[in-house]
Length: 132
Ligand code: SF4
Image (tube, rainbow, N blue to C red; front, side, top):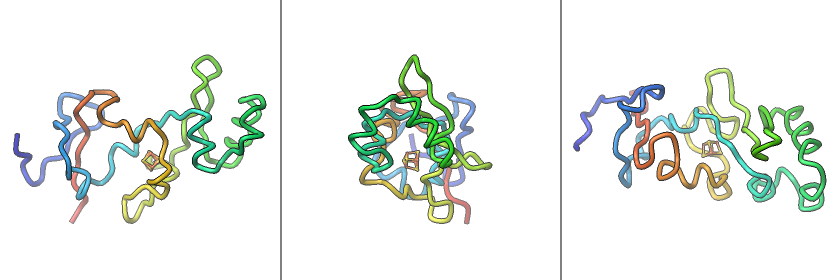
């Protein structure tokens, strides 16, 4: 399907998401980076936010430190998933609000690498063009 120029998906209504194809991210305002990003300890190590030694210790201690630092919003003990913190407008704390680009792209978490193949609606994304 060709996407009309001013079409913007509604993040909260999966039926409005568009079928993902290469190049779609180029002029998107990175609406996927406003969804809660769940990451694992290995992602935090790759990001350089946790070192190998600390990663061997209790995850709750890591979570406490990263929540305090404003990097992580919460930690789920059962699933062992950390949720990255978001700004008041829901932007991921690692997103550049001006360029709408990930500031850690090369080291981004697996959740982000796998989106939208894995996500709320596999193969579809909440494409919304940048204003202007
Ligand atoms: S880590 Fe990067 S790609 Fe992942 S949600 Fe945050 S800004 Fe987006």
